[in-house]
Amino acid sequence: MTQIPILDLSSQHRELRTELLVAIQSVLESGRFILGPNVEAFEAEFAQYLGVAHAIGLNSGTDALHLALRALNIGPGDEVITSTFSFIATAEAISIVGARPVFVDIDPTTYMLDVKAVEAAITPRTRAIIPVHLYGAPAPMPEIMRIAAHHHLAVVEDCAQSIGAAIEGRNTGTFGTIGAFSFFPSKNLGACGDGGMVVTDRDDLAQRIRSLRAHGGRKKYYHEEIGLNSRLDEMQAAILRVKLPHVEEWNTLRRGVAAYYDDAFRDARHIQLPIEQLTSHNVYHQYTIAVAQRDSLSRRLAEDGIGTAVYYPTPLHLQPAYAELGGMRGEHPHAEAAADVVLSLPISPDLDAFDQDRVVRGVLDFTSASSAA
Ligand SMILES: *Cc1c(COP(=O)(O)O)cnc(C)c1O
Image (cartoon, rainbow, N blue to C red):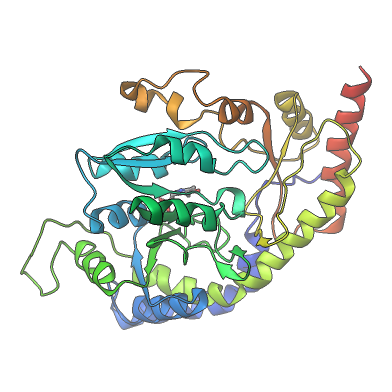
């Protein structure tokens, strides 16, 4: 029996092989590897795709979040509110600038940060909110922007999983002060290595981030502040320029797989399905269900050659790395409960009908058997 990995990019790279090799070869022959024409062109194409004034290529999504906070002058003594149910990078960015992450619980049906919890967590030290568009679904941006405006807070959107996701036609990454994207290979738009991007409409922030990513200077060997080395490289930019025109089509294919799963699981009891709000456009970075016997189901599927993953098994407030913040079990019950039951199923854009069916049968066989027991 063939394996169904949780994500398979081999056919994407097979289809684009010729174009990718031409792009890579042209970088090789140009001899320009850092901040050359491909980065500049990709930034312009990315900004246009999203509908923002500025896009700045960086070396990772983690640095996109980190430099967004740096550019907003957030640092020691400041607090930044974010979801406890995210990848560690969201919180790391806050810690890297010396600020304190303040974790809040999630809405148990959407897994997005709970707007009421955000409001309750605001103190005189709060400077920003980082909503995370988890699994490719948009966080409730209109509500978050309302709270942010009322309390004069910046908003940095973590769009690592949400390229192309939208609310009422407006792209994630364009609501907040700054949007942070990742091109880690497994994201919906992935490089063949690390990469990231910051987007913003504010000229001052764009200029500051351009300077920070290249050692804090705009002129060579003249440094206005301590920056770092965090540039998207030409090779990755050339690869991403080949891929960007396909991202909408890949997202549509992911939505097709999700729709098939939705239909197949509609009447199954004991499975909580991802929900898509009427006005929101989910790009299904993950198709994540919730089932009580999650670990047994995952083992059963593995025996059938079906890959699954748990994003994320430990909420951030319970991570050893954040022990000093004194997070306790029971503090954010919805996130803690979700961490025990979520399971992401294979959702490659080109997962064919036969394999989709194998996944569906694997899940339904298990849930109907365990509910009878
Ligand atoms: C992938 C990811 C990041 C970090 O991106 P990198 O490019 O790997 O640094 C941040 N936040 C979330 C939610 C992610 O999924």
